[in-house]
Length: 419
Image (cartoon, rainbow, N blue to C red; front, side, top):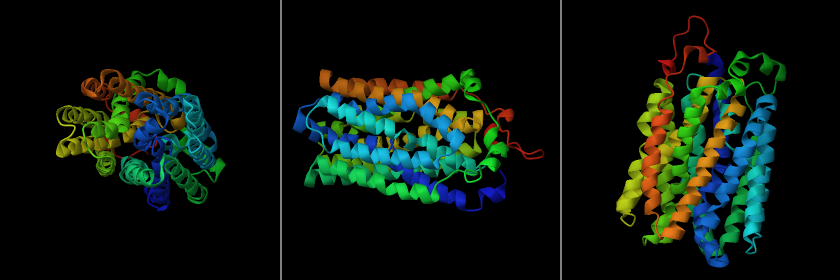
């Protein structure tokens, strides 16, 4: 990819649309707003927090099962049709949640439908399209793309919490359905990867066809180090994201104020995704990972020491959001740099299996800690350990080998990411 192609301007349009899609998509809006529905659903139906948080298991089961297939499909046919179909499925799933009648099995059934039909709105789609348009500024472009989740974090939970307080939780889910549906026209008119409208050119483009296939990738040690490290980190994030609002409310923080904690997460997430994306463009990804992925351990300690002290819980929320921007940027960036674009979607989909297991497991275990032990404290102590260990694992993958950057032309300088 040459500089003229990257700076032609349309790549940034794709980044803008992808940011909206990532914020609305399966790992954005559904999970980010789950926490504000916990108490209303528990009040109306008598479900425990762990049972309600089980929705995240449905999301992550679907992601783990379907993500490699969706990734392989987008590698072959492009991203636009998949994105539109999945946004429609997401909208229908939210509409289904408005019809809950107290059956826990019905609740899980709707979430499974929403999750499986919405897998095509995960980062596989958005990151693949953006990565085809950018090379030297790929970290920044991916950071801006995934900052869409930060914007959703900033505005989504407080708005939905206000809707729930005024009109009830059914209207909250109805609002989410409308938002997902409104994204479909954007995907149709403006979202596609480079070369998707010219299939023959796409198949000849070395930027899109060189690199490892899935079998070659899974035979490498770094694939498993990445997977294990991100599984642990995302396990901690899954617990903190879903249970931060209930934890604060247990400590006496008012519901609306608790929901506004997500505003801090959203602001810091945007800063983290853009800032860390720029660092990835300049320095070794392994060093960047080692330097930032352990920071949420500080957030866990703050939540243990002062869950009702506004400045402490606010600082914890900021740290959570800042580094939550790191892991979501790093997975697609590392996949594209270490394994190439040939099978980017399929390899990224395999990495999302680790992501899904970690996220779903963390939220349920944290809910179990609260339901059985009466406190989130044990889960927070475990969180400190897993964030540190996850950072060490991802940080041990080593530098990007020169042979991995297969798009460099003879005479080009060695990219900073391989130094």
